[in-house]
Length: 304
Image (cartoon, rainbow, N blue to C red):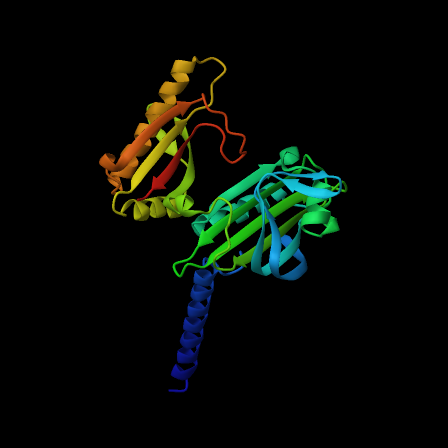
């Protein structure tokens, strides 16, 4: 009996650990929880944010007569937190950016705006006038920004913005804001129409006779679930990068075959061809977003 008790205690302890870690992983995916930090980074500053008019930008920034100008920006009533992380020297801000993009993708968030390099505007303005974090002042060519939104089942809305930059001393930083927006406030790009359009899910592809698609299981599952809605239409937009030795028609054909191949994959997972629409653009449409380049199929779900 004396030997059995320690064994039972060990099993109880292990069970508690499993339950705790399981709930921790589950809560990490909830929209209201702060996204887990990029593992190869160190927290420098944490700031509570509570404002009736917090500035959020949905387009590139510029400065005119010491005033911030942006085609689309909003001062929103929010509560949340801002965090400054320094990225380890053996990692990169590109890796950090992809880390946060993956978390947002898993949460079903919609990216409302993103930019990279000088297209974002001057780093000095982002650092000192938007985020009030002077350490973020870096090179205009080595910065990027995104802002994404997600609406929970109870109707609450969350904005997450991520800004990364490389300073002149080559140190790299991440500034992240995670904010709950008060009910009734208008978020640019998140109107009733945006609620009906989900995506795009960018699916890179490679191959010729057969095709290989690089996409996450969470993306596949989300598309299948959204496609079950009455009247849902799944739109597949086929893109191709014009090869150095191929004609326009050949590039268009590659895009068409890849989109048709992905259509077959979706059909086998329960998304019938009757509710799919294929749009082939090949190399004829140029997208400046760095996350939407190369041979790919972009998938969107449109509901009633």
